[in-house]
Length: 248
Image 1: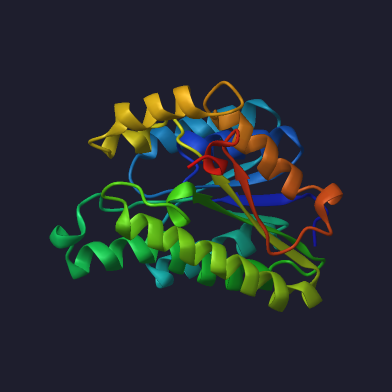
Image 2: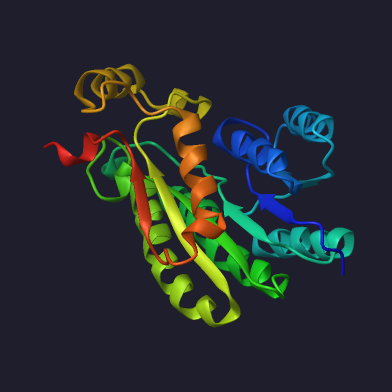
């Protein structure tokens, strides 16, 4: 088996996922770039990774579909024979008031956000013969009320609970599991919120650190959790919000 380190970041064609994939490439990892819709965006990510001298495997897969998720990990096994890092970043969700939610909205959001982390972690662990790191991605909606955020907030709370269970049960395999949770990030995902400007204005005005959280802040924290320096941090959700959640 090759000694070259390999990382899989779901939803890595854009936004936080892309930033994480490129940061890991800079750290010396070959990268599995996962996308669900935009092939051209994924290709751009691949080009940036290859420009850094690293190998990139591009895989289209809706991670909310367990069969497609498992097929993606099979491709990783065939291409690299191993996995060192799994970042369950891909996210989606229906932003609506509770009384307008339908069963399909619930299933779609829970599958892509939470189910994908559980079954992704199962498959990742099978490829981590020498141990590894798994990181999930959450948001403040997991612990606080955000308008129209029910399905996403509950799915993120599930991610944080999964993080604790995975951390305990995968520890004997040498696998550390944690989650990074962020405040309002001005990414493409936020464009789906009808109250986007209100959320951003709140973050600008009410973050004790004096500025809103940026993607790079999340990346730095995730890289720390994925590093040897964080080996004894297990089952934790690290909040990166400049102190916003401390305030009422």
